[in-house]
Length: 273
Image (cartoon, rainbow, N blue to C red):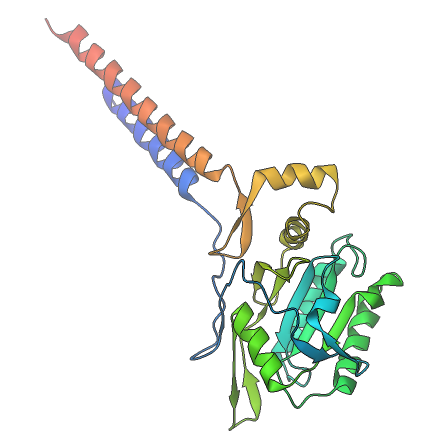
């Protein structure tokens, strides 16, 4: 193999490797969808109506505003008699929350709202009790976990505001809905969406810190927040320097190509009699 051929092979290999590494990114699900009329659409920055009325697990009527104001809120919509999906969402959320050192009732709150107007506070109480039994955190956790019921008007209003689209299937007598949860700021503004039933503990921690305007978390958390940014198309946090790395990779490839081209020209010029 000639010297020129070796140089060409080197530059092609290097270019392929750098371009590949510069553009590779992790695949993740976008906005959740579960068939016609069923989806979770991101409404980032949407202010939910804090005067919307519901009943909690003890049957007490309250406005959503009573559960906001102090801490960010992890909000889930579903229904308590759901035979499968809601249980998986709750389990995924529980696993994620147990994986971070923040505690419900201290750094954040959890609010679960039933989308079925037929469900009762007793159903909410049973579901909440099961959730807390598995959560196993301090005494404050009970004060930070709320399971709510409401009438159709209140449910529809909240679901529309956060982009939770669902429908009732008369044939099977069940609600069709997508899987996911969202993080809302203390002021009641939608901040982050998580799709599916498994949520990254890192992303959830960042979302809570972000929603709390960085008033919680350690110095290390604050530093890491500078290195990551939220991608609304995926619902995940990615490296904020990725674009810079991609640009640098392309620039490196161009530099190598220019160097090799120059060397080849000099080599040919040296062989010219």
